[in-house]
Image 1: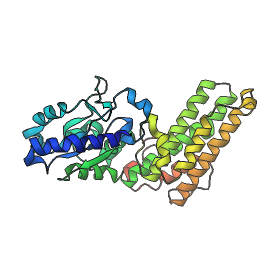
Image 2: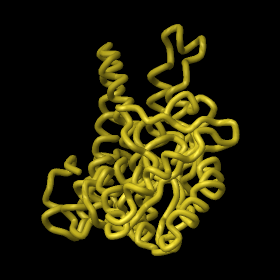
Image 3: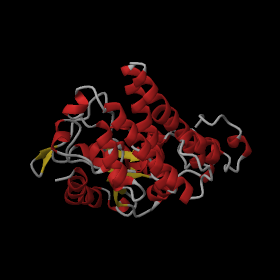
Image 4: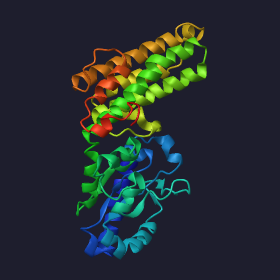
Length: 317
């Protein structure tokens, strides 16, 4: 059973009745779901995930006024719920993870992940937020939200970055992907600098994967799940998921003997880069006819409307 399904079943059997019986006047005011840190919130959990920070549990979100009235008591009631469910033990939250389940005031919950108690209202606020923070704040599932305040905040974030911010990030990532993958990887190999080559390849993958998420207007999860999440994306996701796996595959016997490893990887880098360039062109984000992503970085940046953003160095996010 996946963690999201387990959480929803646990809530329906114990959480919803708890609120209805102990706090009847608030049963049409409490939002519930599972959002935040943990592989289960992305739907990526498996049996290996169950060895830490995993188990039946859910979040209850209250408005500021409601939290002031019942927050502490509701948290005590939550902690008294059964410690096991469907054959699984309730998660034990360690000091390194912090509180992931239980009762939260809505604005405080979002502030944990994005530093703001409101949906960003300016380009500067949006620009300050990494994709990974926003991915964590908007994953998971909402089981109930009768008031709608939690969902309104969530939908405001899921509307994605303003277009100028998206383009600035795309420009920076195109520059990084071109510099590290198309340019410096092969040169590092030629110099015998294997550590530099691996660093270049790693930077290329992170930048290129980020470009795919930005093209899909989806927030990129942190490194552990960014490749896995590609399979969920309609634009280039499934195809590039396989190409990145090939890029990291162990070399075959002939390649391992010293021939063809870097050439094979350079070919895959160029294949991925060509796919990214084609999509940038289709979406009207670049009009460059170059096969080098660094050239497309400048073309994307030139299409930013806001003068202050457009005048920043292309590598700046």
